[in-house]
Length: 291
Picture 1 (cartoon, rainbow, N blue to C red):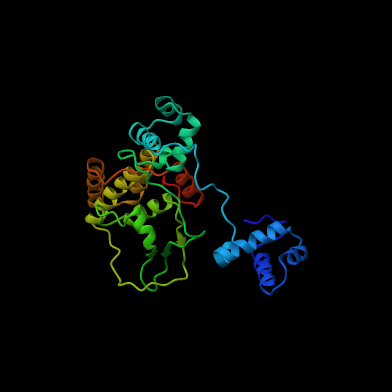
Picture 2: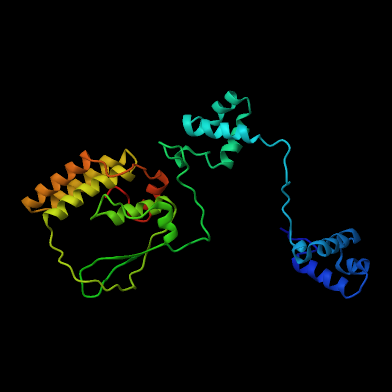
């Protein structure tokens, strides 16, 4: 990229070529534009060799580096990182290379943060790559005409390809919360837009035994799948206390207790706890994962 005081930007180089093509001597054009003859001839030579593409800036990075770490050594560094979770200070002496070199290799392969790696497999599961800032990926819609409060979702296909779809084990209740938590932890935004309207067939809001059981079971699974370990008992404790206050049906209580026990007893899927940075972000958004 040209520095602020450069004599020749891309526009200036094209202007130089236009004047030279008109038949004027390169030395005269160089004097008019305040550059040396050598610089002017350099850009003319590049234009004649590569065309307009030769007028663009070239990267200053060397094409080859003689002292770069060998590929087989890099592979050993990555293997030790994935299989034994070792840091640069321990990998370095094992392979006989400086710890700083190990750190550069880990950074190059995206392994410099253990929390970015899946614990069972050692594969990187969190990488933040976006096509543009502020991508719109999730729309939550309220005020559904003359039917009870509800919502609709507009989901990005790229997001679903990265984090997966609805959790099949849940079937009903809290599946949208599970998806939203995974999206937030992967760096996506959740946008609420109350001005949009969605027409949906009317359904009865009555509570029944299946509702209470699945709500309780899936709430426990949600905590077990995504919350950091210290927050799991806090989240479930606060929710249980709110349920005690709100539920006035004995049948609802019995179904709720059965669902809670089922959630504790059975697995709701692979556990991938969210980062503490995501917990802080949700708290700033007014939805801390303890309520």
